[in-house]
Image 1 (tube, rainbow, N blue to C red):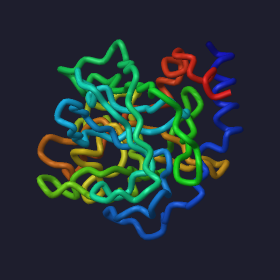
Image 2 (spheres, helix red, strand yellow):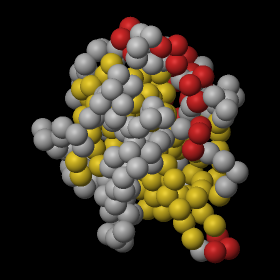
Image 3 (tube, helix red, strand yellow):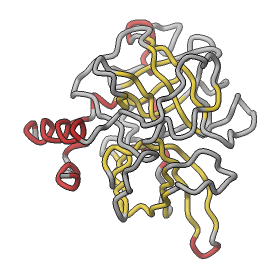
Length: 272
């Protein structure tokens, strides 16, 4: 498995992961703003599909980590048929570059408990029916090294089409927000998230800076020292009192804790 991990990371790096053709505008985001179109080209939108009714309902975000694999949150997955849309920006417009691909199979982490989101393991993999066409608007995110750690106050960005505020309208266009990492030693304090914050999670943002309902499953994007963007987190949960509750930052599944599970599906063989 360790050899597979090295191969996977080598292949994704060689493929140009984490380097958008249209770089994100990271200089103006404070409380969240519309993202530059196609600047997060691994961002995907997950739809529940009702084929008999020819209807589609957006439900969660996801991250393209290989041409036919999407990373998302386990709590997003139920017994439905899903499709993934890539190169999406405005959900209300057919803009041209979108790629819509049905999900062939879903893999939920075996330790996920849908009655206890704060217990962790909120992560799932979606295998697509066919590979996405990687181009200037659809690209792969990089995966972090197993066990890699983020530093307190490290700047990262959450992206998605979630609600613009607690109880507010859902965004029509892809949004991004700067969420500085909150170190585990802070996030696990009793007056913060306490024991709900596990070492297999990443806390980021807080108060005016937060993910919100509808952003679930989407990425926490962090730039590495090599200049590439890595999917360091999968959006998991916020405080039940609201998305912007003080000392209750957004909690993400820490991708670096689950690399061995991710590569166990041998999807790296499909991208060589």
